[in-house]
Each structure stands twice: as structure tokens, then as C-alpha cells.
Image (cartoon, rainbow, N blue to C red; front, top):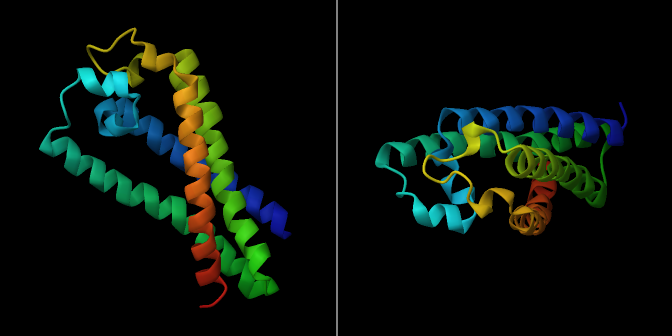
Length: 163
């Protein structure tokens, strides 16, 4: 498997796993993702309970471990086999993260959240609010995420190629 194929493979598998986790948590309790909802929705619901905050922390630990661990391990393994230049390692890491960023924006946010808006993503007492159809909110989030992922990729690639 060449570098591009590995990037695509890891990016797609990671995207599937994280998408299932996100949709599963929304189905279980959409309030666990309350801070990711548009502001108009956040303003009309009660803040998270202590129990919901704890559940969010546990979820985020697993989620972020997969999100950042997968590209790190993939880059590390690839570097051990092919002795990557730093720029190649960076592009590999960033590419994996961007595959998920695009899946999150296009499929989870725009298709499922904004266009289809299934009942399980709607927080009780917020039915019909404009925030559920706010495509720009999600685009802005993806743009900010791209910048953060670009910076994080610098560190992940650097560590993966030096240990």
C-alpha cells in the first residue's frame, strides 16, 4: 500500500468509526453535544447537568484519542517503513484529519443535521429552530477546524518522525 492509499484507507476507516460514535451519542442524548449546536439552540435549553458533563468528558477522551491517535500511528508506521520526509509525514497526517473534517461537514453536519434533521438530533423544546438549518454555522466550524488540524498535524508529524 502506498502513502496515498494508506492515507485514504486510514482516513475513511477513522471517519466511519468517528461518525458512528457521533451519531450514536446524538441518538443516546443530543445534549451531550450541546456546545457543538448553533447558539440560538444553546440559548433556549438548560446547561448540561453534572452527569451529562461527565458523559461528555468520557466521550471526548475516546473521540480525541481516535481522532489524533489514528493519524499519528499511521504516520509513525509509514515512517518506520519508508523513512518519510517531514513534509510527507505532515501531509499524510493532515490528509487523514481532513478526510474526517470533510465527512463531518458534508455528511454529518450538512446532510444529516441540516438537511434531513432526524428527530434524534433535535433537542427537546427546540423543534423547528433556524439553527438546525444553519449551513454557514457548520462551514465556519469546518474552516476553524481546518486551521486547528493544520497546526496539530505539525506536531503529530514531528513526533511521529522523531521517536
